[in-house]
Length: 292
Ligand code: R5P
Image 1: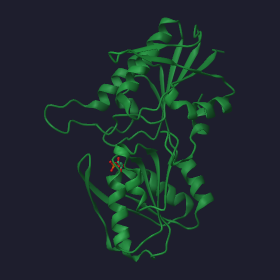
Image 2 (image 1 turned 180 degrees about the horizontal axis):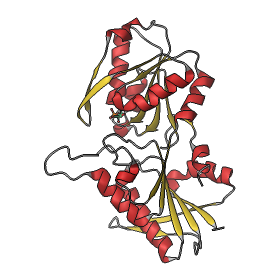
Image 3 (image 1 turned 60 degrees about the vertical axis):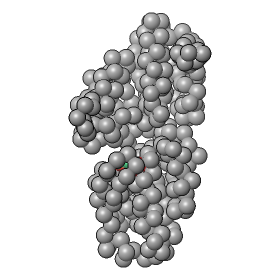
Image 4 (image 1 turned 180 degrees about the vertical axis):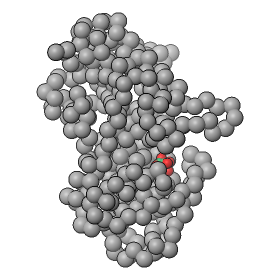
């Protein structure tokens, strides 16, 4: 059997440690130096000859990380690694899945083509699949798409009694409705129009106001990015006199440090550990380890 080597960047170390514990594989940390002119030097810290290198790097704040990954893959290949598996629990650029304005490219496709050149296999969790329905439409390398639905479901079962589930938009349906059905909870999926990266309108319905005021309401979504989606819903419920709101999300990006703003409206904000953040309460290490 091919030897497996677990490589991680320092920014993905906490998840890497969990995976290493489950798989009983040591972790090696990629050595990264930034030169005064901001160029990057990557040195792999161990022999990788004939091995499968399993590289862990979540792709939030992605631009520098993409360089880190490409350089690491190239270094591994130069040192005769046989196979490179990239674990990117959060996969970047997937929301840029069409040309939104004249003069643009399709970033999801560009990144897919780029990564496919360097890696033999990609493992990711709940990528944002909207206009692109399957990663294989844009990735030419092998891809494994996992979902944190069961992990979130188990967390809700353990921590909440009869919550009411809300999905903020059609894209959240696959998480919110599936989880609600599996735990036997009532759910409403709303409609959202996005005008820009930081401007949305969510069409609230009369049905929402029939939810009892003390009811535990959980908003479920795949991503918190700028936070405007959760903010919109949080403000709506606050104005209607609800105070028992939680949000559970797979990927917590929390761009521009939006967490404190959101926290004013939510009793709990919970994320999985695909992206390191203080809200991480649900681990995805088990579902990743199962695929290695
Ligand atoms: C959207 O289509 C997704 O399901 C999320 O609702 C969205 O990505 C959240 O982004 P933001 O936090 O910027 O509103």
